[in-house]
Image (spheres, rainbow, N blue to C red):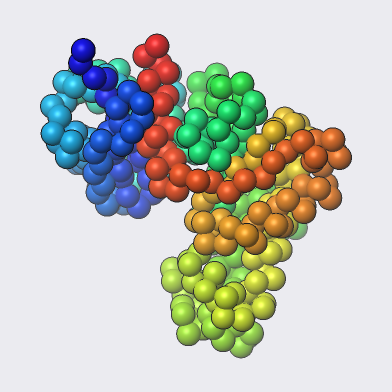
Length: 322
């Protein structure tokens, strides 16, 4: 009997990755390529096709061996029609990704928001396995979130939802890139933290970070923040802890709304500082959510890392096939 294979694809901000899985979701092959922000749509689509093809060839398979492809993509999507409506990081608009891939690979294609796919991956195979209601929160360059409720991703009629990063937190807070003030993302994303940390460097309060990255925001990344804290930059630690507390306080409102049994924390900041984020978010939920809901949620650090989106997308493709 011929084996069944699924491909999961992550159309990320700086890289794209394709992974081939067998019917038991064991990894069989993988490929990745860098994305190019100024790349045109046609060139970008060909790069996606080549990456998926390379993942199959790395396992010695022909394209016809694949039963379905799942794609996790950022930005605004028409999920049913599989159209990328807008991707700010790539400048794509109204791109028929599903139709393009189905025409080339001759198999069904499922399109999902990348954070939704990552949350679904953690629900199926990672830190949220077998949870009834799994909330995924991913602070990094932005703040992404997704939720799986009784086995299904919570979504809108045509697009994704759970835009936790755009929650209004403090109308007196900093402006976000969409022109709104005091959103969760503008206050707790890695970019927001890095801006505050750069000021600490400028004021002479963060000597370790000064040696690691100076005041350049493009160099003050999650790893540099973690190293500076480890080397004794207490001001940097308090900046990050405050952001984690604000994040946790906002998540407490979602806990009151959905009563999740598992909260999965992931993303670049959590990967670099897992203990700090788990500690602060857990404490903030306990302090701000209704006691029964706070007691009922388990806070866990994501287990799958870069594989969360690809394995979640592949699983969604398999689910659509059954």
